[in-house]
Length: 67
Image (cartoon, rainbow, N blue to C red; front, side, top):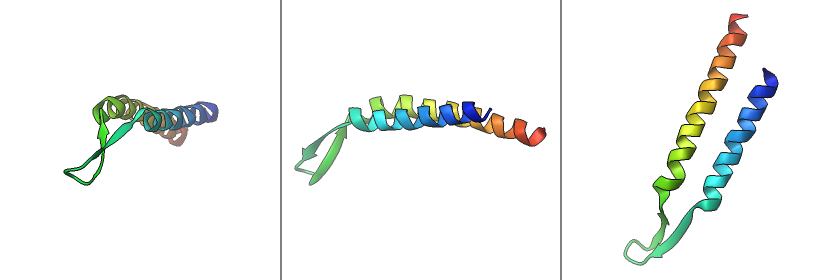
């Protein structure tokens, strides 16, 4: 079970790094700041994967506490 927790943690970390890499930004003169383009495209798969991994880790923790 420890291996599954480690693999899921590394998978979650990889997805978060990937979302940073695919993010693109441009300068908006009206806001005087950088604005992310397509931030919804980068965040939805990340949020669903994070939720799935966290659910698996929670279930593993509960099984460990039950034993």
